Image (cartoon, rainbow, N blue to C red; front, side, top):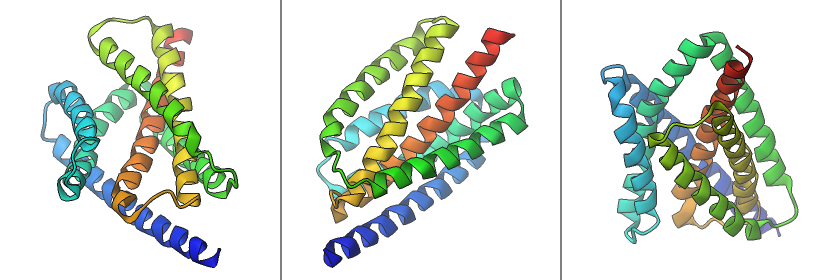
Length: 213
C-alpha cells in the first residue's frame, strides 16, 4: 500500500511538471499570436484537432510526445485571439474573474478526483462517446450558423463534460492507472480539461449576456 502511494505521488509530480511546462508553451504561443492575423484561428483549430487524433494512432512515443507538446503552443495562439474576442465583448475584468473561477473549479474537481476512493475508470468509454458527439457538432457549427440558445446549450454541456473529465483524469492518477509512458498524455489531458472549461465558461457568460441585452 505504501509503495502504491509512493508511485502515485511520483506520477502526480511528473504529470504536474509537464502540465506546468505546457502552460509555458501556451504563453510563448500567445506572444507569437500578437504578430499573427486573426484569420489564423480557423485553420489552427482544425490543425489542433487533427494533431489530437494523430496522437491516438502514433506508435512512436517520441513522435507522439513531440506532437503533444506542439498542441499547447498552438493552443496559446488560439487562446490569445479567443480571449481578445471575449475581452472586447465582456471586458477584461470579467474575463480575468472567469479565469480565476476556472482555477478554483479545476482545483476543487482535482481534489474530488484524487480523494475519491471509488475507481471510476469505467466512465471512460461513456465520456469519450459524449466527447466525440460534442466534437462533431462543434466542427459542423464552425461552418453552419446556429441560434444563441443552441450555442449556449453546447457550451454548457462542454463545461460539464470537461468538469467530469477532470475528476475522471485525477481519479485515474489516484488509482495508479497512469504508466510512465502515459505521463505526458495525462498532462495534456489535464491541460485540455482546463482550457475547455475556461473557454466554454467564457462562451456561456457571453451568450447569457446576449440573451439579456
